[in-house]
Image (cartoon, rainbow, N blue to C red; front, top):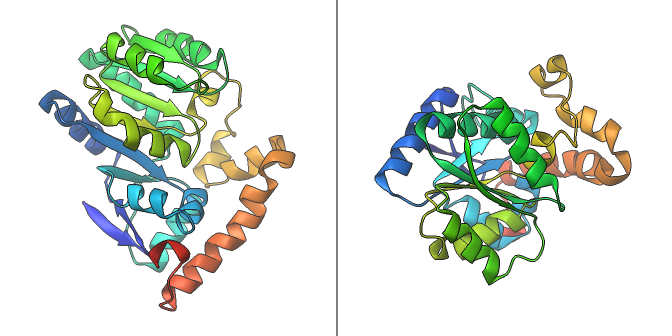
Length: 248
């Protein structure tokens, strides 16, 4: 069920099992569906990128990711029962695929990382079928042909936001076998274990962003330190009834 979070429509689910049941039903029905995630960084980008803003507001499923969205939901009096972030939820999609016999294609990240992620996933989920892998570079017609030839049911794109969402929206009509398109951000780096997860207690309290900032301060300081202030600025602007650039 979609609900308005400031100016973006987000799905409200009780837990992962509810989402997985719907995804399985959608895949079996032959529908072509998009599943994306919304965190504070995504929200910020959407306020100044109209194309991305429109994609988020028209995708089939948009799941809440992180402490920022949880805070915004409390301000809007929405109930988000679980943090359905991609780093935790996408492996559950892979587990479902292993049980149901769905084939997955991994797309994105630097050379070799998707291959490493595929190995780790197959080690973790017995019977999982990885239909193919490709890096996030050189995404020409030959890559579309590769995905089509793989007969993948699920495409997990880890190219970063908003590139992955725009690429999926532009190309999904050309990928006939794929039923579920997932925007995964840095998921392939996590699955390959190139990037470490935060300790469980930090994840539990929504502080994984602090752990990532400590690991990569040079790359992530603007996203988290500046971005967090910007996120609350946008909340204030929208609550006061003003429009952001993407709404004009």
